[in-house]
Image (cartoon, rainbow over all chains, first blue to last red; front, side, top):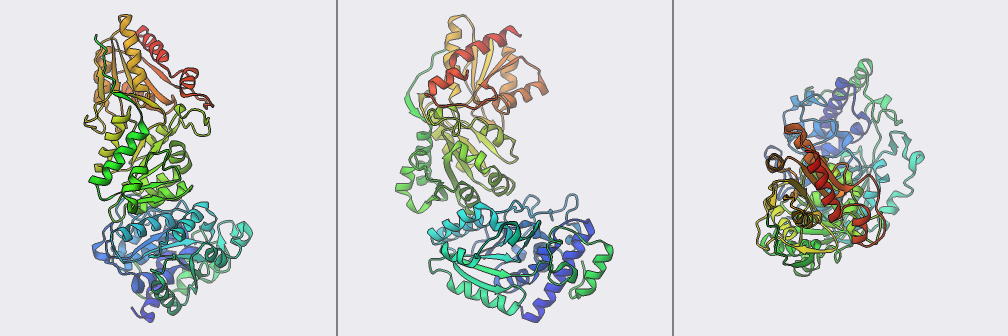
Length: 280
Length: 318
């Protein structure tokens, strides 16, 4: 998919996100909006996958794990527009008997999802496991995982970081949504991550950086990541984003991490986001 | 009222796990093993030596081990994780909950050194809450085999069960009384002695204590039925109801807290169907301490004599 079309998809996904959380007065719009460009590029340009024939094992396909499961709205919208399930199902988000749980789950069989996430810090370990199995199966595709930056405060992340480097899990391409914000405030104030790039490098990871709102750069960085795979090092992409990107009053603050807009705020948000593919 | 049983030797149940895992290495190419720096203690050396490409040393990183094992199932592997019972459950409860059980991943959590019989290392390592934690978890199967042979057979049997499993075993050498070729049927209790006066339902190391107790009781003319309830979940309700109907009173025996263990599970079945006098042999809401396994079983009242006393008390309540 070309950049211009992907920008249309990202705009529609941003509309979906604010409409989904507003409809149930709950959910996490901030990080979801910040990752809309990333998800669009992954699912329409980077991943080798088969949305209409989803299998749990995903043999000879790329696998994607979302570790910071609270940004489920952006994932659900992206999966739906990539044809994993009907776009109309987005209307069931967080409602009784829905496959679109507040945090991602495989419990009700939503295509595109291979593991539950929400309790933070577990996705990198799962992705490592899946990557190791791909190697055992002589499957040469990649395993991708997205984590939040606040999530890196979880100790398990660093257990996993050690393991992947020590065991040369080099078919693994991890991304951190580096927006600098978490529920209680700025990451710097809550618990500073220090020099994140140097930390990952010191842990033995090939570490790249990208502007998470520049689609050309996003495509380029993941193509580069693929070219670096197989060299004995796991790959980390530190992706700078703005929480709430695309909705002016949600940007520059942590306040929309886990709060839904009211009717008036929703209208203001939708006025800033072009309807490109049709609302669900 | 013959209460005779053939003792085939004495070995630790963890060695049964090690042998079972090694056997699976030969028969099940998708079985992989992960260990958090306790390869020798878990008796995983033989698997590691003969199947090095399928053995994953994760270091002292149990959380990473559990979630990684869950990830390894994607693509068809059957991961067996190995560490002490304390670090297999309490330390990683949330990883088991989200990555394994809720995500329906085919991971076998294999836990050694469970309970007081870990001995001298003391209470930090003597977990007595693990059966409770694991049986409360939706989607989880919980198995506590009784001796070396049964632990080996259970290790092999769970490979063909598409489900998360918690397999609990221990450190000390204990008598072997199940046949080496006895089929292990998940969820089906084994009756060791038939009896008519009292039912002793036990799991793990307490099964042999129950056997000894039944033999002593027989000398006093008390005819005890002994049931090896090796699968705590799914629980063999039919066997529980049948034995309760036959004897009219029950003793449960486990190397675990009374709160939340086998006894609680049995009591739920009885109270819903046929309220029956029940006595509990288990640890009563306290941590353990350092000593030999035998000293600890005596002090914390999970010894043969405690099973005997409980049986008499249960009979008196009929």
